[in-house]
Length: 187
View (spheres, rainbow, N blue to C red):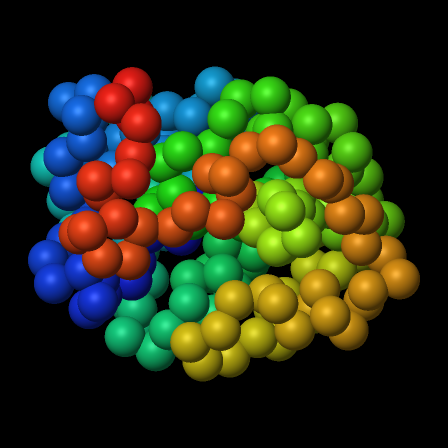
């Protein structure tokens, strides 16, 4: 899960933004991911205090010393870490997407394999999480700047499994405080 961004458009640390449930945005996103995947690697800014952010025990934390360079650095750091594991698929999750439904996460997991990329789609719009089979990890390692993995998805379109879902949460990232008002009270 990528959580090392600067939250510039939000105006404050959106990871700490309180939700109606009483949890922070980051806590809600981590809880959903842990429920679905059973394990989680979280990329934070260097100097962040995981305990102060409410990171539960068992979550692997990586610190991105170059968070100001953009999203690709966090993604590369996460991929480098997972290369040491026996994982076959990597899910790119964003800390500002606390509304993902469990059935959506279970569906993208079920559709994933080491030879494909799985992307959920809601009403014709691609969303997150995007799951990358290990075959594509070298391409993720080559990313630079403030970009995600969209270029890899486009370049490898023939390997992308698009999964149409009825979950608007796959496209709902919270970039501005006003977006918090659109969230369901249970989030």
